[in-house]
Length: 178
Image (cartoon, rainbow, N blue to C red; front, side):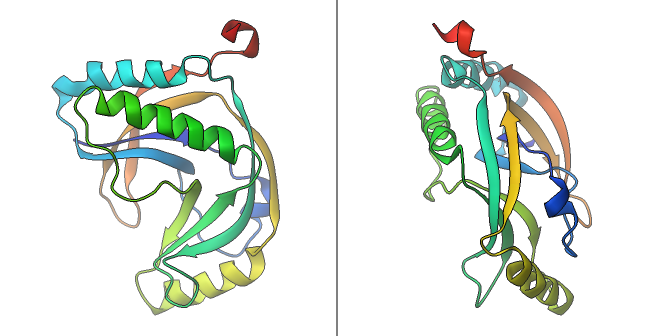
């Protein structure tokens, strides 16, 4: 199965108000496996638990809309993470280390905390990307709390993949981390 570990996000009203397509599942991907055999789920679950140890819920704020590889040739349109970025990056690093200790290779690309809004696949998407970049550059979209790591199965579908939650590991409350 295609699978990934993510932090779920809510699309705040200012983001929902933009005239752009938004995903049905807004999230920050911490690790994408590609194909993950079902028999490896216990090891992935253990890695998620190890990464979440002593990590309280993360207060995050979405801010700015950008593009990969860049605004001149956008292929992926994303919303950035302002507040909470450091905590997310540390959690992702702990997850990568815990997965590597269990035989899963690390991501090849450097991690950049973001949530994909949509992929640019044609002229209509290109126009929507230009609108999103102009309307969302530097704009704050509001705070939220991230309280769990989740493993999802991803099934390719049109216009976007379908995600099914397989595992969840709560981030412990601050009093539980002492």
